[in-house]
Image (tube, rainbow, N blue to C red; front, top):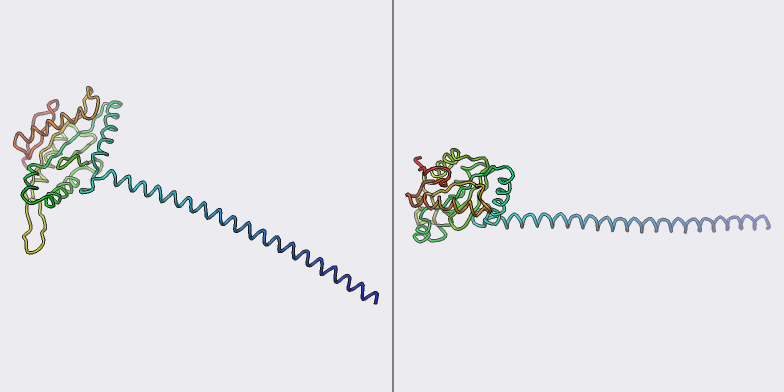
Length: 245
């Protein structure tokens, strides 16, 4: 009996030890599981925060890009054009190198709106912008300045280069009429369009970009006064030249 009791006591001690070890193991498993869940939770928060920041930056970038574009034509708007001009005049002061500032204005655009309506006028604007965009260099900055007036900021363009560029722009706009597709049974419209151009550069006496733009605008006015469908450099550069293409 005493031997059996010893064996039972040994078995009981073994069982108690096993229970204690089991409880300890269970406690460790629970702790590990809790820590793992906690780690996953914080990891999830980090990923969520990083994803949120990424989408916020992306959304902000998209909104910023949209705010800098003209809603009708898709090119840069005047707001961004002003920023580019400030950047350009700052570079001019440091390097004494000015980009060409080119104003384009669609001739008799009011007549187009009055004759066929503003919807047709909008389509003319889009097609003119498309032709201009395909003619200028990829690095040139094309901005809608207001209404039917546009500004090109073109780096590295001399008066001689400007004459060639302006002649190409005059030709590409006037060569073929703008075609406006209309709903059946109305016939498609074909509208002859031309542009007048003023070209200038920054000068050492310019305090702001507006000083240069006033000269360019005056050159544009002179191009219109002299018959339209032509370009005029500012007085400090050259006399008028006419598209013959």
